[in-house]
Image 1 (tube, each protein chain N blue to C red):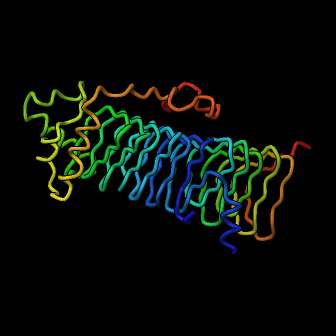
Image 2: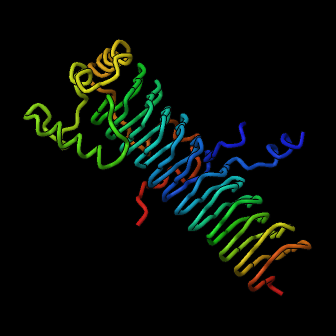
Length: 113
Length: 194
């Protein structure tokens, strides 16, 4: 049941555990990262960085949810959420942000105020 | 969908290198290089402009680049492939379009052993003119390279029949498949990163 829900929430593009991408990922559909991406990620949809995932990249997305480890600058058009098991190092530029209790974050936040 | 499948969705472009030990399913586009220790599946509609190194490679889309597998390579009826293919077992289904050099048999998957075997085959004389004029090797040659007897009955004749007629019009990557059905990015001009 839980597994089904997880699959439902997964994006159309999935970078699974055990996979390393060195370069640029760009697209126009939801993206889920469980593995490692180094370089740059840009999507016009949501990006989910799941627990266990490592992203060392500059990120552009509509919304971003961080459960894993992200190093890089983030620009999200709608929102950024750093979940309780998420670790984020870098600057965030977004109109709405959520940082959960237990999350780790180091960097600047620019909410256009 | 199994947990350990990486999917590159239809509207996603990855440019750069992909490494790992999990299966990868490509519906979108990859520019660069793929090097994994399991199965790479290139679905109909996907475009790979990449060198591929995997355990098994199943192609139904467009691949431009050299493909090397430690297991087998299957070009299905919708495959469009330009590049060298190296694998112990190669299956080319009727309808597939292929241009390149095909090497079967017990060939290692490392670049070193590939280039070593290439040097060896080139030194055999004028029969193989070199990379400038890629062509499919004759089945008899492929058998002589093959070390696995189980492969012999099935694969070489298929290669022969599938490739004897004038090769189908070769894949022009940008024009492959229905243009209308493609996402906007795939209509852009192909380019290599850097």
